[in-house]
Image 1 (spheres, rainbow, N blue to C red):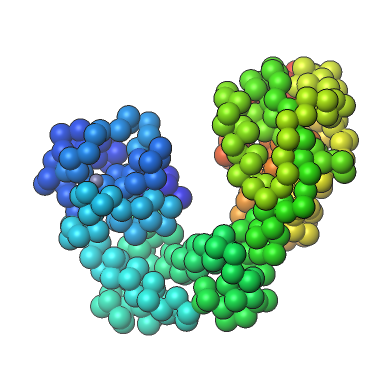
Image 2 (tube, rainbow, N blue to C red):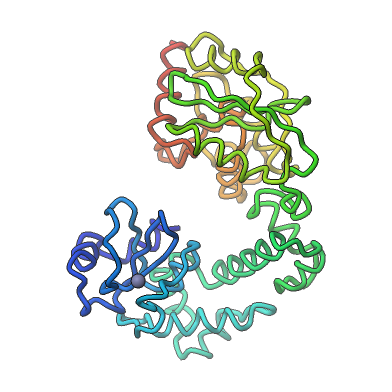
Length: 356
Ligand SMILES: [Zn+2]
């Protein structure tokens, strides 16, 4: 989402404006700092972040959609947006926010803010990164997630978030939340998880398992961060360090060394029926080969599900065991890999070498 929103901006010029605290650029864009989760106007007096920590957004609403909060010091929402169409789009965002229970149609929205539906759709997408409809969906999903985190009963949270009926959210949440609401709220409740972190050919490797199977496989540079992510994913589970979980770790290490073509390990993860279908399709891709997201969607008999397939790949908690690295974009390029594109490329290269 960040990348799409960035497309409307010249990021080098934005960065220059941030470095020089250019108040003349206030309203032209906001910058968000990944490490703090806060976004600011260019002239904010706060300490300058490192460039690689920064994302730029044309509108405060786009920054908030990406999960950032407004800085209390420079109050970036109080600046009038200056980009052509920006004030109208900001008004449309506000209109959608107050009508969450029954989001306006594009025609209604256009009438409310005084712009033709077609023009509004394009301007909105350029400045916010998504269409008004997707924006409304995202707002409701965020509201729902917040309420589920706060421990509201699932059915109450669904109504409170403005979804007319539970069936609608279940249809969408499946693809967007990564799992059905009841499970998301669970946070791994009742699971007993042992994990270990070892060295591997691709950096630090975390493997976690229950008595029934592997529930997390992740790669990184930093043990603390790997453990943190595991605990965040299964925040209600009982998690203990257990360096004796043995077999699965040996198998994965052998695989990473190119000595083992398949990882037929039992897995114990909570997932929707759709995610399971996608993961099974990934496991069916032969070692050393790749498939596009579209090919996988077609294989499931639903060309339209291509984005949902991408999301199912991105939310795969057991990388390598479910080889989501064998899924690539239709242009053959690598898209997103939770553990970094370099690792994804290294995995594909390793498999190709062994295969040929
Ligand atoms: Zn600020």
